Image 1 (cartoon, one colour):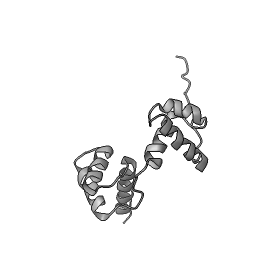
Image 2 (cartoon, helix red, strand yellow; image 1 turned 180 degrees about the horizontal axis):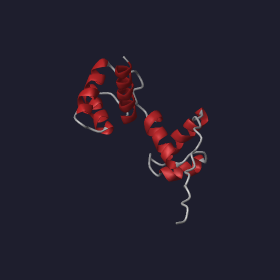
Image 3 (cartoon, one colour; image 1 turned 30 degrees about the vertical axis):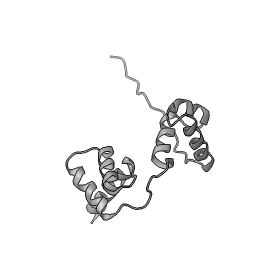
Image 4 (cartoon, helix red, strand yellow; image 1 turned 60 degrees about the horizontal axis):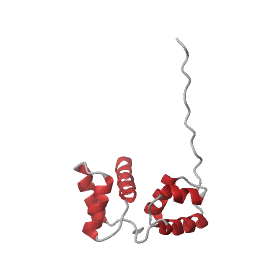
Length: 121
């Protein structure tokens, strides 16, 4: 039986976003109406479409509330996570309830941090 070769996926080195990249990404997102992420990535030249889309919607989009979550928001996250809802749905519930703009990633990270604190105590 022939020996199977392992296929190694190439991992990209984690490179932090520079201020200049964020500014360029904002301009391009407006130019392409927050669509056509492949075109945006091509003009960026340093990032792929997924990286650009996630950076924009997770960090740069106007109105994202970056303050720590309130105890009330955390309680609502815990309540709805127990029902099996996904992070995007929970973020939408938090945003509707508290008239804020939290990303699904913020909600997920907060939940995981709280869970870690509980397990460590």
